[in-house]
Image 1 (cartoon, rainbow, N blue to C red):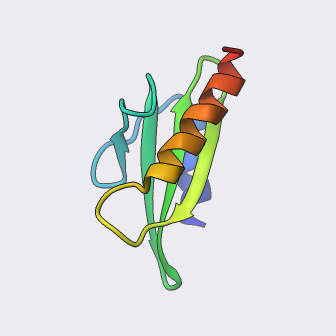
Image 2 (cartoon, rainbow, N blue to C red; image 1 turned 120 degrees about the vertical axis):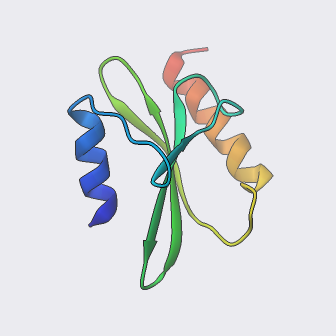
Image 3 (spheres, rainbow, N blue to C red; image 1 turned 45 degrees about the horizontal axis):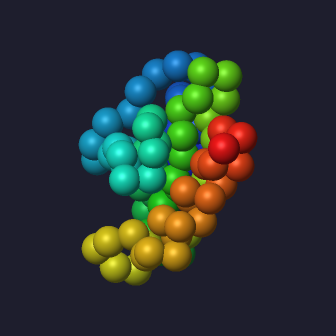
Length: 85
């Protein structure tokens, strides 16, 4: 439910800062990590704010301090596909 709330906020053109979202320039420009905590665990939604959409690149369960390298690679690949590169 919390993820949906924040994604709707982004769709309206609002920005979200810490502690709920942080930029991820290592993935790409305008990419961010949405932080969601619920009873089942800690979740992350990696997204890009594009001119016409909020592009969800990956959703994963957060278990370590850093983003797993395989998640970074998946996000970069999906971002290239979205941008047609």
